[in-house]
Length: 307
Image (cartoon, rainbow, N blue to C red):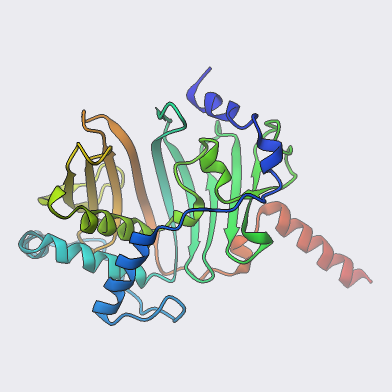
């Protein structure tokens, strides 16, 4: 039995009770919220409900001199640079990217195979649609839009995987259910470049003297092939179960390319890559519907025209 099938089996126990989506999400993230709010106020940024300013457009190439000039800025004050990257992320109203994740999940914290996922993201209302690109993964697509369908995740599978509903039927669960059953590390409401940087800064700020931030220069990021600033955050292993974070920031755009988390023994705990980022897209409600939902809407539209 391969790793993905082992994780699929965890859904059986108790899933039918949770399928109703009545489980409440208890993730409050108090420290993250406080740090994020403080950073926004210090920079004079707009509130989340307002239209953000566009960030620097993606630049495909930099000269060696330009890259070294930017590296020197980061080298002098990496902590301030992390805040700059966070603020850049708060300016992203919508985007698409290819998300690759590999992480330890479940009670046994077993490392899963990598998953490649096409993502559509919208900041307000918070919306995430995911389409799994690997054919051997049981999931087809999922979508979450805050304020819709009782804040449930809707998803379809590629093939029937009991106790889930068989395709093309749409499953609905509370946002915390996939993480509870080892199908994801975090709920979908934790997704996004902004929240990645928010968590990174919150953890580093809370660590105080138990945290160390080191700039390691410009490297070629393996997951995207782009030149990246590599920063390493180290924490006291006696207080932090995952004491090392490697963070890769695009030299040209000052936006995250990926992050790697490592255990005290150096083994991989989780890896996340954000490739093919497009911040110029203009997403609509249609982008946050499952294919089955779009087909149903179109059929109703054709029926109305015929009448």
